[in-house]
Every structure is written in structure tokens, then in C-alpha cells.
Length: 591
Image (cartoon, rainbow, N blue to C red; front, side, top):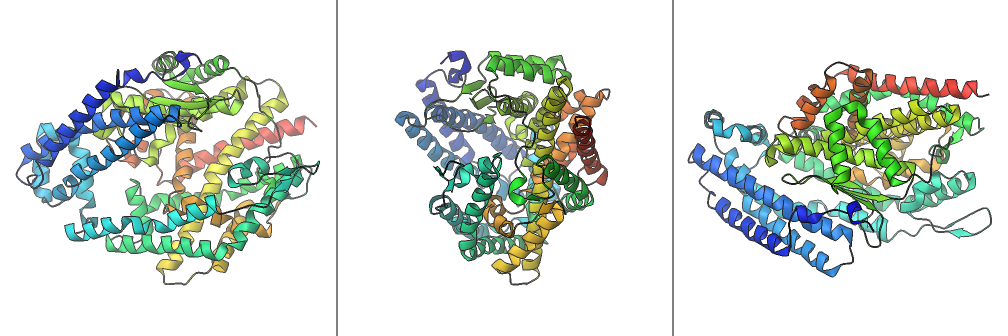
């Protein structure tokens, strides 16, 4: 394997001795931090010095953790790498314990005194952190109660752990058969591949195999899920939130109004999803599609043999609209081993970008020459550029951004790539296939995830109102939502009412809505970039450069994305509508 297509981890630490020196230095900083315990109320000098030491410790820890994780992910069978990774996990626990007193102590200082401290110019780079603590004061409990809750944290997450173990290790799905009668293995990992099969029999068998097992265990899963729901409700009440939704969105740097506006606007535009499903039925030659037909690719745009160098050039060409500086950094990333490209024995699967503040981002790929891989490169480099700009312009405390904005830059890149490929394509049906692919992505992310979010909202509302829920009630709630979201052109198969039971994200209270708001934000941003709005790219890069120095909703407002306003979602659905109409026109003209 060419070394230039693998990470150069010596950029983090030149050798193992340098790593050990960094670990020792980190422990030295942790000892310094501990000395401020009980002293943060003494004055601004103590708070500033404590945060300055924390900043240095965070920089060291990020490098140490990144080095161990990246080394491990290159070869997960290497025993030395495994040992190192486990060692650093223990160090991470020590780090958390050492700095755990800081926020509780700061929260005990009066707002008046904290406001005085923030007038000190040295505190400017820590202002966001301090203000976040001030905002959370009413939700921080006494030291004794916080200690009790911390001890119970593992118990609180036990239903999620039990669900994961139960569904991932103890479920044995009925195998399916291909057209020649050969038996095919069925499990959760390959279920989505079967649903995209051109063979309707494969899709139907996989669908029935999946949901027959969830039907069999629905009462157990219901109990696990409702335990999780009740745990979150109790925790939210203890912390003085008005609802679980307020608690969850507050932790996201968001608010319930964003959640409500999303659902309202998605419901208003469900007719577009119905139109898309109707078109899919026609392309499949059916009057109505079944639920197991929804994910099949009716127009095949896949190019299965795209060499990596061609993929690189395609990404650079597609993102050239972002300007010289942006593209120059992308080239630098490709040429300076930011990416570990090809799949390899025992290498971590999937793809990710990991920012390392004092070095640069590192991107993991498993490139197999498919068109999806090209999109993955654009996506992960979106994360990388966000991390690059944030790290370049912010200290490590302010560089880290929340999940509310984490998927925006990556999805903007994907949309820009998709539009480049669509506009470049001259063959009508290939163009149609590319448009169809983008519509499928938007539908699955914006609309389907909103359906999940609406399910969660209804469940939590009922439990908070004192209603007792059963598996039948949960099934009916979900089934009714599917009917509403998919419309008359879809046969809502009975089995789909069990789908809620196989969504692991439901164990992370009110998590899924961020997928919908993320792609909405990305569509608005990409649309403005594509329109050539003067000064907008500079405004967008400035937003990326803020990292987490501002709250997430304020960051998005910097680029004219207001998730509390209906107009934002209208832009996203107008984009969907225009693409859908173009697809219809191409298909009609080809007849």
C-alpha cells in the first residue's frame, strides 16, 4: 500500500518516546488543575489560571487520544495498538475526574461576580464557557444530588445497553432465498442492502424476516424503551426542566421552538413526499408500492469503478465554487496524508473525520471505487474543513462545535457535489438517476427523520401526561404516522408498525430531529452558494471559523439560517420540489 495514501501519525508524535513525554506532561497539568479545587471562588486570577491549564491539558489529551485511536483503527488486531488504546481510555477517565469540579464550582459563584470577572480581558476566550455555566445554573443540583445521579448513570443507561445486546447478539433472523433457491443470510447489517435489491422477492422476504422477529419480541422491547423514556422524564423533572423536550433541546444548544417548527413545516410539505412515492411507484410499474419497495433505486446511477485519483479530481472540481483558499486546503489535505484511503485487513470500517486541534484533521476512508465513495470523500472533507477553520481561529475550548452544526459542512459538500454531477451529465436518464439519488437522500434524512421525531414527541407527551402505554399503543402511533407520511400511493404493510422498535436512536432522547435540521441548514447554505450570492462564501467560512465560540443557533443565523423560522424550511422544500419537477420532466420527455 502506498504510504502517501495512509496517515502520517508522526505529525502527532514523532515516536513512542514523544507520546510518553506528552502523557507525563498531561498528568503534570492535571495535578496543576487539581490545585484549584475549592479556590475558584477566590477571584478571577484563579479562574483564569485554572482554565489556561485546562486548555493546555485538553490540547495534549486530544493529541494523545487521537494518536492511540488512529493507530488502533489502522489495524484493530495489533496487540500493541490495543494495549495503547486501553491505556489511553484509562487516562481519559483520570482526565474527566481531575477537571470535574470546575463547572460545579463556577456555578456556585454569583452571576454578579462572574460578570465582573468577564470584564477582565484575559477571560475573553473563556466567556462562552462561563456563560454556558451561568445559563445552566438552575439545572445544576447540589453536590450531593449530583454525586448520587453520577453513581446511578450506569443504571440509567442499562435499558439502552440491554436493548443493544438483545437486538445485536440474540436476534436470529429467518434466512431468505434468492431466485435460484439459494439460502441468503439475513441480519440487521445487510437488511438495507436487501431493501435496495431489484428483486422484489428479496425485498419482501427481508422485510418479513426483519419485522416478524421484532413482532415476536415487541413486549420486551416496549418495556426497555418505556423504561428509557421514564428515566429521561424523571431526570428532566429533577433538573427543573418543564419537559423532556426542553431538556434535550437545551443540551443541543437548541430549543423546543426549533423542534415544533420543523414538525409543522414537514407536515405542511408532506404532499411532496407523497408525489415522490407516487413517481417511484410508476417507475416500478406499480399502481402502489409496498413499504419494502420504498428504498429500491428505481434509476441506477452507480458507477462501480471510479479510480481514487479521478474521485479526488471530481471532488476538487465540484467544490471549486467554494473559492481558491478552500480548494487549496483540500489539495493540501490530499497531498499531505490527511486521508487513510483504502480498505485493509483489520482496518476500522466506515468513514469519519477526526480533528486534532494542534495538528490537522485525519480522515478515515474505506475506498472501493464506487460513486458512493466519491460522495463520502466530499462529506468527510466537509467535516475536516470545519475542524480546520475552527482550530485555526479558536482555542481548543471554543473550537469544538455541537451536534446541531456538526453535519452541516459535510452535507453542504455532498449537495455541491451532487449538483456538479447533475449539471455536468448530458445523458438524460443518467441525469435523472443522479437527481433521483439526491431526492432519496433528502427524503430519508429530512422527512423520515422528522417522522421519527414526531413519534418521540407523541410518546413523551403521553407519558408526561400520565398515560400508560403498551406495545399496541406504540405500534398504532407509529403506524398512523407512517400512513400520514407516505400517503395514498403506498401500501402500508402491517409489519411496518414494528419499525419503531428497531430504531436505536430512540434510546437517545430527542436525537433524530438534528438530522432533519442539519440537512435543512445544509440545503439553505448550498442553495445560496450555488446562486452566487455576493459575499456569502466568506460569510459561510467565517461561520465555520467560529467553531463553538457562539451558540449553535446564532452560528447558523450568521449564514441566514434561522431554524426557528418557517422560511428556512420552505427553502429546503422548494429545493426538493424543483428537483422533483426536473426529474418528472426528464422521465416524461424520455417516453
